Amino acid sequence: MSYIIDRRLNGKNKSMVNRQRFLRRYKSHIKKAVTDAVNKRSITDMERGEKISIPTRDTSEPVFGHGSGGARQRVLPGNREFNAGDKVLRPKGQGGGGGAGEGNASNQGEGDDDFSFFISKDEFLDYVFEDLALPNLIKKTLNEHDAVEYRRAGFTATGTPNNLAVVKSMRAAQARRIALSASSRRKLKKAKAELEEECAKDNDLKNPIKIKELEEVILKLEEKIKKIPFIDTFDIKYRNVLKEPVPSTKAVMFCVMDVSGSMTQQIKDMAKRFYILLYLFLQRNYEKTEVVFIRHHTSAKEVDEQEFFYSRETGGTIVSSALELMANIIEERYNPAEWNIYGAQASDGDNWDDDSPQCAEILHQRIMPMSQYFAYIEITPNAHQALWRAYEDLAPQLGDRFAMEQITSAEDIFPVFRDLFSRKSLKEAV
Image (tube, rainbow, N blue to C red; front, top):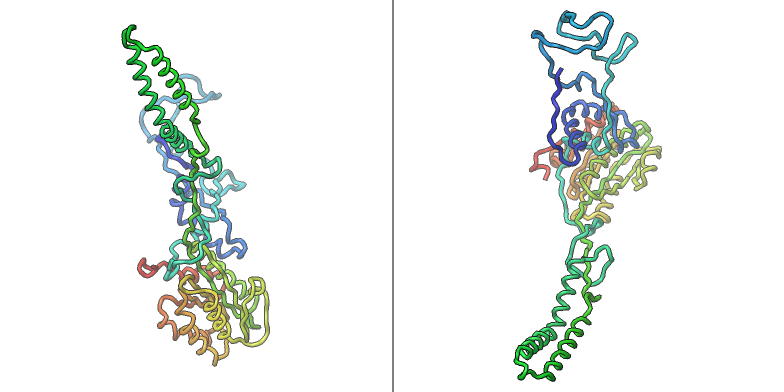
């Protein structure tokens, strides 16, 4: 058997490059494992990685082997059957082993276990949201800037030692010394020239008094130049670093859910899974995401997450109260010019028949003009009721900014989520 060794130099992050190559190669296996994990996980386990197992037969690597025929010499380990010079018969068949072959290990012999590895949270969510896109995704100009980045902005006379600009400071010091000593250097140069000229004269013509005076002037000028400090506090410069606000994108997700007596805890758990998928999806597309929980029965109320999912009320259902409250909150707190607004409504379909047309009117007239997207999911195995029919009649007027689907079991949540947010063309998505 021959082995090929690649000795080409690798760049930085070699392990990461190899890992990404491996994930691309076994993409279909990983996507299937991720889909199964989403259906089985609880809501609190969504933000973690996943252990992936791939059958050994799918991870086999191609190898080069010697074909049959030809004369070869081989060095074999010591044994009790053959001596030097003995001829050994070639094994029958192409295979050389009698192992258990591929498959899981068992008490019948040895086998190969499945290859298992762990993918990170980010890799897990990448596969969860692959081929998905937020419809009508718009990055709007914001007034608030929570994120900042540090930007170089020249030099300043004050700062911390770690920002000291040594080269800039030395150049400033040299420029100051040259500027302050320029006049003295000119006088020094002139005095030295006169002294040299006087000393070059014949002894009869030399003037000792003038020579002594010139020597004293030169000495004073040199001392004056030496007194100029090599570096002064005025020369020290620091790199100036400014905090510059970075524009971010904001989104708000409205979770609207019926908590009347017909909504069982099982239905609420399925709705919670849908909401958490939507929230994680928004977090990956927007830097700032807020969530507003609105529960309703005959009246609507804004609550926290705990009360939203685990409280239960008795009595009938009036959905229009929740939609009315959602429209009021948007108008009061979330300016559509600054926020990307998304709504998700979960219900078992129960509602007063006379209230369903009013729900469609509020959704059409008040909510959809301010929203990017609104999704309605009906969690019930039963036939559709008046609320579904009212939304169904309204859907053609709202276009691709509105979607509605039915969920009958927990296994339907992820497929329905993918259907609601399936990737559209670039023109539609922007």
